[in-house]
Image (cartoon, rainbow over all chains, first blue to last red; front, side, top):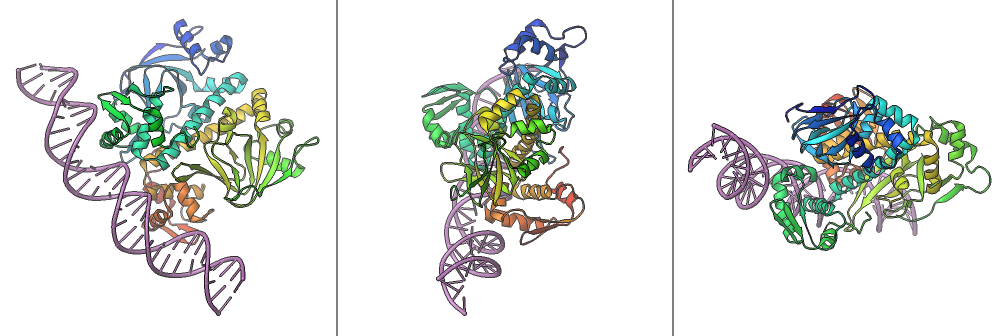
Length: 246
Length: 246
DNA sequence: GGCAACACTTGATCTTGGTCAACTGGTGCA
DNA sequence: TGCACCAGTTGACCAAGATCAAGTGTTGCC
């Protein structure tokens, strides 16, 4: 919750702004790896990298979007807030993920605040420049379009899950997401504190606790932040996933 | 629920496919009005217009996306379904709105089914062709990107509302949306049956009824499908809208 | 070591919205 | 005219999740 312990690491004064190792890291991002090195260099001319400590606020809901951001290292949470004190985690981002492209492209105020959930390094692509690049570089526009399309579909799934599924089912889906493509039985490590996960799943921490104990009946055993899942397909079936299409 | 009473009105056999008046209608869409007439003609070469009767299914959740679609006339509902019988309306579209761009661009199965809520005329832009056009025409990619960005933000708002607001507040937001930009007091006509609105807001019809009577205490009076709102800013305040940023 | 702070859990109770059922009024149709 | 059907409302009850409160570790700090 404390503001602005962040630290600009590399900035845009002379020539190219990013340190070579940062540029290399950016080139490896799934997001930008389809772009030519030349295009990438162009796009990142005015970019900078900023470090944030845990719990630093990166921007606040309502702010004007100044830059498109990409998580280079760490974790970022996007939280929606409401006047009466309600708050929820809309999304949690990890390394390699871009955030708030829609706000930057539409030049509308942020709908969410961003907080560093872990010490993080964030790439910032200034909005004005980025919008110009998108207008002038078809390759960038295309990459953005496919990325935003994929992202859009995760949000549609989110809306459906919120309207149609129980807290325990949403938690199970979250856990399945953590297992990535593994099948059969697995042990996963929870990448966040349980209260963060609760906000992400859309329940209170108390309810998350109860949802976990409910999932015991479906082969999910929790020990601290290690979760073992006995039978992923069974868990998937429990939340009706895979019957409708992924 | 009955399938395929639809009727192809103009198709893609010889030369240009659309009737001139359809092409003119397409050119007027907010979506495409920034494109040059030449570009538009190109893009719509393989397009067709299909008519659907009320309750016709346009496509089903899980189907492979064959074409990007645009509502020329009528209303279309996008519903998400779950194996155990649960169903919800994720979105309702009216004339001039495009749907399922994300599924077409990513070539992934539909996450929702589409149903004509009213007799409708739907423009279909075949997927293969459309994807090629997007790749080859920067102007089209750019238009799609801004449109999808705007759309994305409405979904983010939806997620926040579902997580943070009560049924009555979501109904109030829906009503405010109907009033568009009007201020002060207004009377609006509900554009759908109440059961459709209930699914859209994310509650049962019974709960919608009760939410309406709850809103009486906030200056909302319902008579059939005419709704009078005494004080829009007050209603907005009731659902904490405008305090957080729109 | 001892104590405060925090994260999480568990239990009791309350609120919201869902479920089931009965009823009303309109609409279409025989 | 009368009847079946559908959309919507209302009431009684139920269930999921929130809230409030107390308790258990664990961590970090003096």
